[in-house]
Length: 254
Image (cartoon, rainbow, N blue to C red; front, side):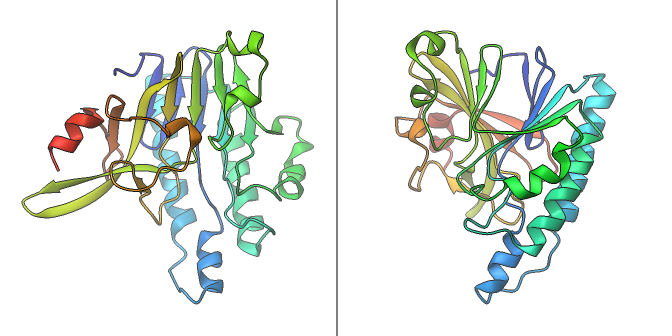
């Protein structure tokens, strides 16, 4: 399945040309502090690397002269479920400030990890161009985290107007084998959910690669189906996005 021309993967983000929307998903800021509480010590480099990847994406948009009206964070901006960690407070505010320099409005879609996110976002809502919503709709496109089906968000009349659904949540990845070496890569997926086009975004959480969609248990209800005819675009370590065709072709290379 080919990604439509108006939906352009840039590193770990997706740019929607017609609506001038740039969307990211699953930052999971605060992950290092959560690991530390479990006795797992990791260097805190994720936020620095995240900013560098974002700067690269913005530079690509600038060179292509693609203006950005709206940036959407499509769920799981934070990692802790039941509280806000010190790291989350610091890094989420800093991230919002960076993103607001590159768009006219910032929309944060609540994910299943974002139960207690409102107190942080409210710190920037006074600017008037920050929104925290259960989903975001731009024309016939719906951005939703991926843990709740659109069937429960819209009535039948509105569902008919939706042609494209963009989700995160799954952290899709695939493992490739070459000369006995197996390496896992984040990836975009594109396929169908009922009669609608479905895009699945890779996670922007840089400490882990994600779920191998060809081997591991699938979580998102949108992906509880045969995925072999889904398109797969792998994100290389340098941020380049490579078209690997359908997942059934990737399976043959393993």
